[in-house]
Length: 246
Ligand SMILES: [Zn+2]
Picture 1 (cartoon, rainbow, N blue to C red):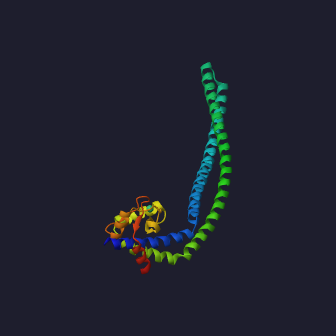
Picture 2: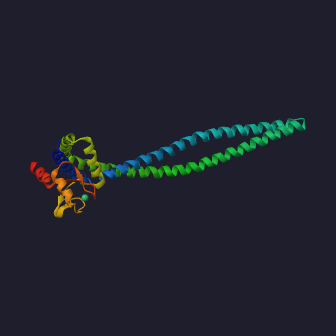
């Protein structure tokens, strides 16, 4: 493809991209808001699951502790009864030690139980708050999502047509030039290709172009960019011809 055709195709591509930008702009912040809400809801669900899991585990552990407490109490009763009947000091001391150990264990279990109960009530309170928050956010999300879908469907056909047009132009351009175009567009958040405007200035940054650059541009033997803003420069005839074509 000669440089002139390449520039023309690039310029056409940009015209379509600007139309697509316009469509996206009409949607405003809505897509970002919907996205943000999706993330927030996912985080809330994770937090709810975490608390839910803790509460379930707590119930199981509390049952275990109850059983352990029962066992330890029985053990203490048994040792105490045995101690009454012992004959030697050695046996008496040994059983006393067992009883002390069991009482210590009893204390530890009570402490653990209290810890679980305290954490449980915090968790239950958090869970309620999280569920309320989730309900609210889900409601906002649904209504915003519907709003966005309505907006998208309004311009759906138009968008599809532009995307097709875009593909047609993009296919004609070599990958390297295309990715360069896309990079500049991303960096400038708008136009990657600009004509020369009044007083021989770059149509992107309005800095005056050197006379040699203007001559080079008219030759159309290669693609030139503006030294100031990095945008691709096109001679005005490309702009005129392209607007003529479409
Ligand atoms: Zn410039």
